[in-house]
Amino acid sequence: MFRIKICGITNVEDARAAVESGADAIGLNFFRGSPRYVAAERAREIAAILPPGVEKVGVFVNMPSTEVRAMANSLGLDHIQLHGDEPPEQLTELAGLSVLRAFRLGPDGLTSVSLHLKRTAELQATIAGVLLDTFRAGQYGGTGHSFDWQRAIDYTRLPNAPPLVLAGGLTDENVAAAIAEVRPTAVDTASGVEASPGRKDIARMMRFVSAARTAFDALPNAVRGV
Image 1: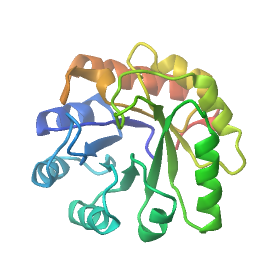
Image 2: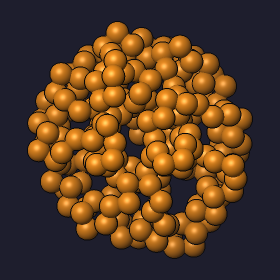
Image 3: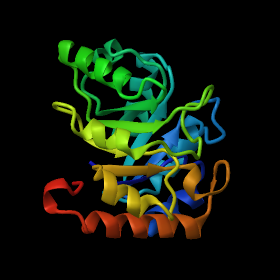
Image 4: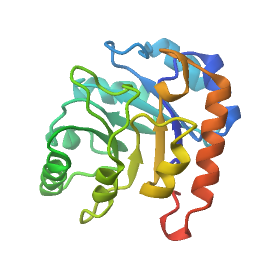
């Protein structure tokens, strides 16, 4: 699994800058309601310039499994990120793909996460990782707001919890503290390194990756991302 993901890449220039900054994954957002939406043809152009070792993550929101699978195969995605209201049953339809399940933490805290994981286990489905994001009504990620990191720490203590990808308001200024406190497997940022929605700020992106990498390297081996 990657450790540092820059999400919401919409153009080749930002993709190259993310790679040069040292990110080991980029996110391509296929949700049409997002300012970071990227069409399949543009995503193909972006994917073509990525070197080996930089993972491609497709972000989907409430898209039929047949379409998700078709895009994953066409673009050679390394991971599928379900960032909407998809039920656990959809995981069985995506068997064979590496799926990251995103949860936007709302008033019920980890309750919905626990129930989802319980049902996933009952279905004998597999989740490669869980991404915890901030809940904002009407928004599927990219809010720019953080949540109480104690909830993320509590998540890591759940029985058989999949690897944690920490998101939600992470910036170059707070990512090191987040990693030190939560000890996630990976971190993810989109709006936190933007100049404007859908366009990255190269300096902020480089500072983010540098801070995150230094913080990960300072963790004990037992909890360091792989």
